[in-house]
Picture 1 (cartoon, rainbow, N blue to C red):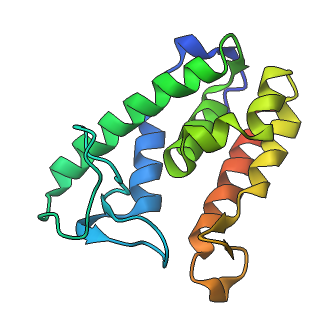
Picture 2 (picture 1 turned 90 degrees about the vertical axis):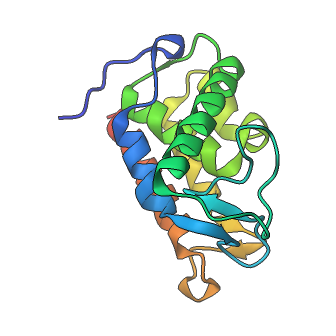
Length: 170
């Protein structure tokens, strides 16, 4: 049963379900890859920047799953701080919080801060914020709702976020 109880985001932390979901959605690569044409290099579970601030390059050495998990936790910790600062005093259910943290992990805090998702959350328009997630179905200029564009996973992930978000608002 979904916990629809909303609390101030300052009291929430990323759930283990979020970490599992990101690990599953991002997959694991021990060596740097470009997930889709035009993307920046990633390693591990979608890491684009190492904990020390250095960007991943295609020439970096392979890493272990354990190292990838460490990078993921470090990155999500940073994302959480940025997210909480961007929408102070907003109340969310755990499932919403996880969905938005996952969004920021994938698209970045800059994208979130300029989005109608954030605007709607700040105004208390939770359903509209959920619906705004569906606008983000593009990567490298390609519409990921079209399977032949080889980025369909982006579209599926957005729909999953939307569904989790809407469940918390019914």
